[in-house]
Image 1 (cartoon, one colour):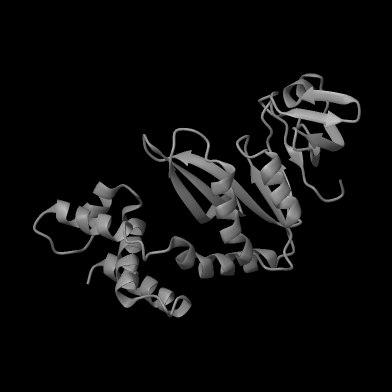
Image 2 (cartoon, one colour):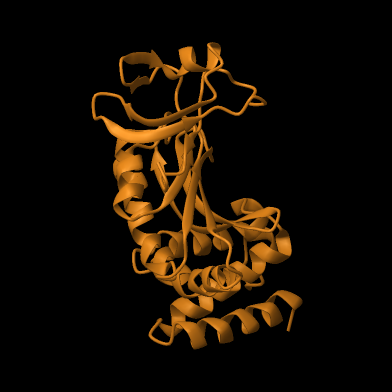
Length: 249
């Protein structure tokens, strides 16, 4: 038995405990693939195929094995991740500090982007769930909402949450979603978004240029999402302003 196979046995035992209803064949294949990724320290399919401990006449047969498993519609990443994510979130919430959830988008190929929701775990971001879309631009709110809706039930009811996000996410829709769930948020705004505070009507970029570092109880865009805004003096991009968490505003 190889080291990868021994590691796969340990992963399989954990999956059996946390996901007792998972199909045995799916559990075995998932365990083997995860163990191979941990050993290879890569998500590249060529690297995985070369390291996968399966007897095959050609490497491309291992490629096909991996491709078929990844394309299997019965493998639901959310269901697999849920029990592990709940354990991590409960552990972090037990320390009394707010859970810092991080929404971020990355390019994974010429055609695909991944939207990842992670939790801050010490100095690292630990992935909880994700969505992959064929797009060259920002993944929109509908996919953001689907991802957040999937993860929200995993959060302990007593935990306070702060959602962190870059300039793709400072929208009235996402801010409203957070406010409905009493989540705090700190989302970077695009410089061209309009900020309304009483008689003042400025873009976020203009507020930064005028060194307006704090605004309370302002409205954002035509949707009139009610927020507060801070601008960190050390922020390298003066055209964007982070939203202050919703509580107390």
